[in-house]
Image (cartoon, rainbow, N blue to C red; front, side, top):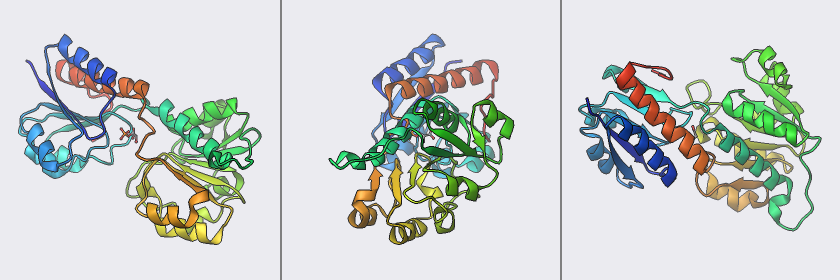
Length: 307
Ligand code: 3PG
């Protein structure tokens, strides 16, 4: 039976990705509805009312959104992190939640290197900088993005270390990555720390002053993960106590103005979350989301279900 799929993206997918989604849905006679660049929650609540499926990015799918959707059966987050979806509310209404793991990981990893280079080259200010070659990058969480960071780091001739209690050291070692046993060991031994932990109950505010203060002299923290994992009071304390500390973030911290005002030369923050904002990542994640929806309705396929 025909279904209606809403793509609700405050930060839209590239046009080629939307065309690809439409193409997937056309093949099975599903209807595509688009809500892009919306500014009011009410627009989202109205748009979701009678759709069968929903594709989103970092858009907040709260209990209110789920309750406003009379026919909703599935939400697919086009991307990796699904901390923006109230999974408990979805489960309570028998709504399946999926993500599209790995589809945008190369884009995020490339941006992590863009930020490392930016800081290494003193923000392209005209001052002499340093090179990545020969430095040590510490990957905090070795999932799809972490693996992509490791792959690119080798091209820069960096030593790669990783900490991830959920991934065996054999997996890391097979990739030529040095597995370290503790967070302290990772933070104290690397020139760059690239963060890839999800935001959840055990990680929110986990990157605090105690963790940061372990960092090597002149080291940089690169955050392409989530702003919530940083304890911002601890981050400011680190900037105050350690004049050598550098921070690159693809997430806008709540304390952005203070960081820019007080530590401008040592911080780089993107204008908007840009990690997955490439045509390729949008196409990969958007089309995967559409395919997962079609397979869910047509074949009862619940691969990538997260709730
Ligand atoms: C993800 O979790 O996949 C990334 O954070 C991408 O987020 P975005 O779709 O909002 O760019």
